[in-house]
Length: 188
Image 1 (cartoon, rainbow, N blue to C red):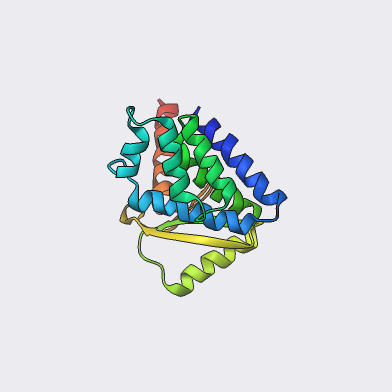
Image 2 (cartoon, rainbow, N blue to C red; image 1 turned 60 degrees about the horizontal axis):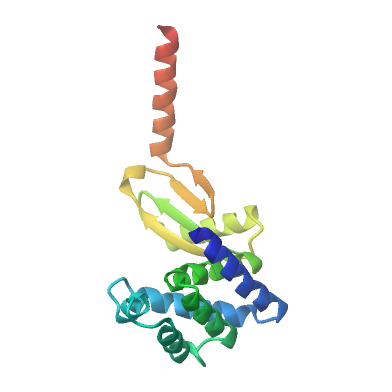
């Protein structure tokens, strides 16, 4: 059900942003709220405790959310946050904001690439990877996330959404091992 909640509320907010030509405004606000929730509103935060506390009336929670966000984000977002509280879905706020962020990136054709290599890449190598991704996808730009993992031995693994391009030596060795085990089994 969680995916349904973020999709229903996120789609409503995103479609409103598109229809009103306010995609950038909503995107910026969704990013600010998402970062706020992850920097200051963890599971142990005061706001999370207040919003989850069973003895605090829902109306009081709605007023708290309105006071916290009114004037800081578009009014439509504040209204959505209040609705989430009323429907007892405030714990899904970060999921809804992430969904809006992802939808906006797809709409603006901004890809997010997670690149894992055995050793850190130089700036020239990073530029070459990004250039190649731009040439081979429909994205206009990329947000690049680079990580190292010595277990890869060599090569790289690139993940964009659900697509994975794995040219690591580790995966090639695994595939070779699997082929060899099949040969041994078939020859018996």
